[in-house]
Amino acid sequence: MRNSIPEMTLNDGLTLPVIGLGTYKLKGNEGVAAIQSAIDMGYRLLDSAYNYENEGTVGEAVRRSSVPRSELRITSKLPGRYQEYDKAVTAIQESIYRANLDYYDLYLIHWPNPIQDKYVEAWQALIDAKKWGLIRSIGVCNFLPEHIERLEQETGVIPSINQIELHPFFNQEEQRKYHEEKSIATESWSPFTRGFKDLQIDTLQTIAERHSKSIPQIVLRWHYQLGAISIPKSASPARQLENISIFDFSLNETEMGMISQLTRTDGRIANQDPAVYEEF
Ligand SMILES: NC(=O)c1ccc[n+]([C@@H]2O[C@H](COP(=O)([O-])OP(=O)(O)OC[C@H]3O[C@@H](n4cnc5c(N)ncnc54)[C@H](OP(=O)(O)O)[C@@H]3O)[C@@H](O)[C@H]2O)c1
Image (cartoon, rainbow, N blue to C red; front, side, top):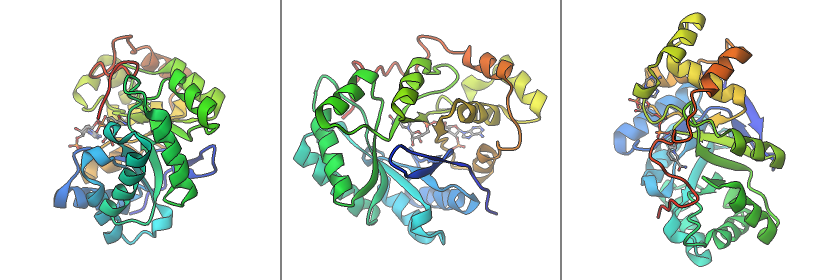
């Protein structure tokens, strides 16, 4: 069964579905089966990363699926340890070999690592890889406005997308406003706070009952109405289907506000503030 997911257009013209599949921890045969199931169901955007060590799994699922490559949007990410220009170029080539693909639709710098301070040369490598046809669209993850300003000032090229931690406990209001001003798409990682447990609270339960939907569906609808692309991970076909069945109802302004108000300044899942946190 094919479910249709609405699309949005990035500032460079590439279209992306508003829900994709997170693939962190989806690896090996079970990972291929889970990703294949998602593609069969209608998922067209797959999020992976060099550091998830599953680009091969994603590539295999793509090859086994009957969906034309041109209809899929496949993402990977550059690790912090490869942010020097030459290393970044080699890592992008390696990502392509690992997935056995000809190109990625989206390639992102995984973290800015501002203390290491190499993200501008990494960005130049992504710009060049796009020119060489290895990547269709280039973006970043976890970049604060000050990091994006530097990319723009030093290379003249602005990211198409910024993938950031975004969920009801950390709604990123200011960062989203900045993206809007710059025409950068917002993509939400860990849209469920990495697990469903913390979302089982009265506010969300009440809204879910009102709409005869589940809490995960309410949360994903909130992301969608905020204008963000979300990439929920699920290994289960039933939950994958649940997670894209959110286009037949809407939340009103009061409900949107009630969810946004769950945000706390210390609401990050693991205190990974990109101003100081670094990942390699
Ligand atoms: N750029 C970055 O720095 C960054 C950081 C973190 C994550 N990411 C990306 O974002 C993706 C999503 O984030 P995440 O994997 O951390 O967490 P998440 O998507 O917020 O949550 C995944 C968890 O929720 C469960 N789940 C999914 N759908 C459910 C449903 N309908 N009902 C109940 N439980 C459900 C999954 O279990 P089952 O699998 O058993 O369904 C899994 O345990 C990642 O996979 C990765 O691709 C990027």
